[in-house]
Length: 419
Ligand code: GLN
Image 1 (cartoon, rainbow, N blue to C red):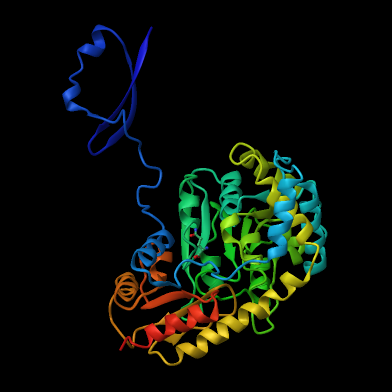
Image 2 (image 1 turned 90 degrees about the vertical axis):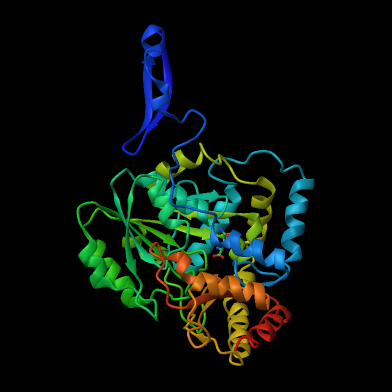
């Protein structure tokens, strides 16, 4: 029998598709009682708006404000990396590389991991090049999660995490980091673990707060996941942006944790080219196979000439080894300048970011405050409340200090005026 597919929404309880026989029966239905959905979609992320980064960057550019909101450098990247990519294009590297990524790049990454974290990764089976760190995280979550699975996520949480969980039908179990140090309450994590817990999402150095995982966190994590079927996704895109001599405790250092993890990285953060959208993910061979099943039908393979350029450039250790002290100088310079303002710093040990408390200035909500200072004083920041599902508001904003000194100076000259 011929059928027609009719999408209907009968408020408020039912929304979906009916398959109706065509012919006289269909005509007997009073379609006026139905709210037709044939030209709209049922949102998978009904609560999501446009990301705060896009909102604040658009406002900053509209108002010609200094943009210390979205995290990206405003100084030039290394010319020799640009030349390597140019060369690759001129040399004809303009067609697809393998789905997993350009092999010499994966080999260079394996060499870097072994040098930095003392463990060997198989470039064939354990490393996949991705269009950015956010995509690597999304792909890992999508490879693992099924409807109803629970994922432990710490708030403030980078704004893609919870939507990535929910788009897969899984449930975000939100645990606040302890304010104001933004450390993990492991007792609380322990309480939240149950048979539905499928994953823990970690991020160190942490966006937006600049907190970092310490040895005691690794011990707690190890005790917690031991013998349990829990997968870790570790967002380590700021691995080199870590200050004050603190080591980056990549999960790749610990074979027992590594074998339970997907670890995600970004070239944009390392080589000052966030717009290139290049990153990679590392996992065990068997899990990487699942990751690649998703990746191959989404992006398939990333930008070829950039992979060729990066493969050559990555062999030079100096740029990534000097990155921590380069960025620490920017943090210190910014913190010093900010002493002239009424903002009060919370600690930042890593990332591009520093959270400031403005409670001495205003009792406005964070979003209103961030928008007002962009409009009235010409400096854009990110409200930390955007990283909490329930909008938790500590009267803090996040500033990005990955900027030229002159940019930081102009911003602070303006922020001083806020009384
Ligand atoms: N990671 C950047 C930040 O936190 C933004 C990236 C984006 O806009 N998606 O500011």
